[in-house]
Image (cartoon, rainbow, N blue to C red):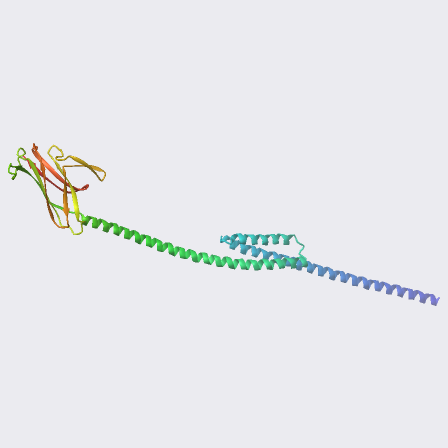
Length: 296
C-alpha cells in the first residue's frame, strides 16, 4: 500500500514537471512572437517614414524645377524633361511597398536626379545672369542710339537751318527798280515823257546788289509789265515755274561776278494805254522786285 502511494506521488510529480515545462515553453514562444511582432511593426513604421521622406525630397526637386522653368530661358525644354523624370519617380514610389530593397533603388535614382538638377540649375542661373547682362548692355546701346539719333536730328535741323540761311544769303537783291516812258526821235535820242500817246519805249532800270556768297555766272530774270487793263506787254510768253505758269514780257540776261551791276532794259511799243502800269521782276518763280508807274 505504501509502495503504491509512492508510485502515485512519483507520477503526479512527473505530470507536474511536464506541465511546468510545457508552460515555460509556451511563455517563451509567446514572448518571441511578441518581440517579432514589435520588430515587424518597427520595420514597417521605419519603411513608411523613409517612403514619406523620399516623396518630400522628390516634391522639393519638382518645386525647384518649376521655379527654374518659370524663368523661361533657352534651357526650359531640358528642365521640363528632367522634371518629368522626377514626377514619374514619385508615381513609382507611391505604388511601391517601400521595403528596404525598393528604398535603396529609389534613393539611388533620387541622388542621380538631384545631382542632375543641381547642374542644370547652376547652368540656368549662369544663363539667366548672361541674359540680364546682355539686356543691360542692349538697353545701354538703345539709349546711346536714341541719344545719337536725337543728336543727329538736331544736327540735321541745324544743317537745314544753315542751308536755308546760306540759300537766303545767296539770293541776289534787286535795288532801285524804276520804269519810265520815252519818246525816241529820228536821231535816236530818247526823251522821257509820261504822255501815253508819245511813248514808244519803256525803259526798265534796276541794280543787282553785291553779294560775295552768291554764285557768280549768267543770271536770268523774267520781267513782267502789265498795263492798266491787266494785259501783259512785250513777248507775252509763258513759262512753268514751281508748278505755276508765269507770263512775262521779256527775259533780262545778266553776267554777274559778285559785284554790283546796273541793268537797263528797253521794251519798244506803240499805242500805250493811259493809266497805271505794274512792273514785276522774277528770279525763276520768286518775285524779287516790283514797282509801278503811270502814263497820262
